[in-house]
Length: 526
Image 1 (tube, helix red, strand yellow):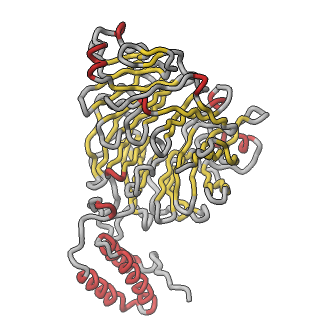
Image 2 (cartoon, one colour):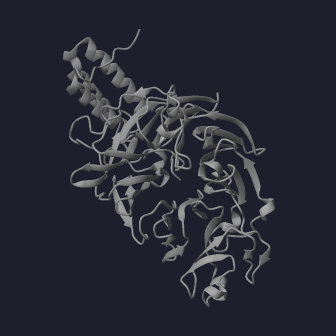
Image 3 (tube, rainbow, N blue to C red):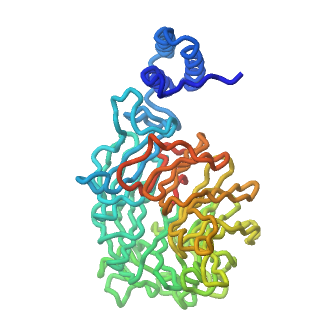
């Protein structure tokens, strides 16, 4: 027999009271008991509405018997003031005439942005004042997030446990086109394309360093936060920043003429603490062991992702979609580029020895999981247009095992990729109305669901605008997306849409993040 369902519209007060009790029980680690009680109570309400108060009272008694409870939940994390355990953070631009930015969060279990008892009409991060937030760097393991506002160049730290701001990062040099905070909070790296500098905020040793690199527009930092790569638009070269050891600092304290020979820029000038290097073949070695030689040549490198063991940087050569010759993946050893003093060692390969994996479908974004790398790009068509493509690379033998079409997007533009429940990979694009499918009058959309077990593709339609953020709400079989400036929800089992009536926002939703994810890998930008 099918279980009756309590209609929220018919019994709003009863629904709110019961849901509030369920929230409390779940916060006391009594989830399974609460679920059973909730379902039993719904059934009793439908049988006889007049009994609902008695049933609710019995549930309160059950709660009292559960004991005093706890202030922690998964992995010892602190239970937040909202008492919610499944929160999705939303970066909103222009939420009102009086604010250019807001950070709101929703209960992703019930898909609502207010409390059931109406005591909290809107869940939001207190103290946030950034303008035009565009990215959320999600670090749920540390219970923090880093939100970058493009309107004022602000980087604001968010304390997930307090649901409040945790301070802003000062010292950035103008607007940042790419920015990253290490997990321990010790370093901030930012690429400023307008100021032409790589900014390093070294909060471990202290200092703010602006390393000159004309055209810089993106950075990639490894998961451990011990190396950073810098990329220049329309260039075939790769750069990396490294903190000099004490011996190197003493040896090269005379100024630019005595810097390490591979260095492009060093700061400070007379006693450099940080230097920016160009990736070069080790044809020569200077008197402190720094290799220098012929610059390593790539093909419009745009980003790097990293192997699960942290030893290899997979540099994405954007190729044709970025004005180059051919897309591919270049494999580089991480060790020489590690910036922590005393840990960097080894040499980069010679130009001829750099291993490359040809990716005919384009390579502008990628995600590594175990021994598989999923590479997304735009594939050039005979008519001169581009169409979206996903290549699956087997890292055990460095070969492309499959290639399939996905949603179109702007060539070389940032896309969004994230793994979710039910063996699904979700891929979001921008400007999908400029691709091959749109021009030829074929169905098109900016969001793709890919099943990693069956290799099947589901392109979600209709077109709702640019896809700028995805959050995988793991364990609940759903993803939240920011698309066309609004929030939408999808089921990971079949790609169907979930009612988003109670999570829609006023303003422009630009990014989303699952604050209570199990790992920091629940991210789409970095």
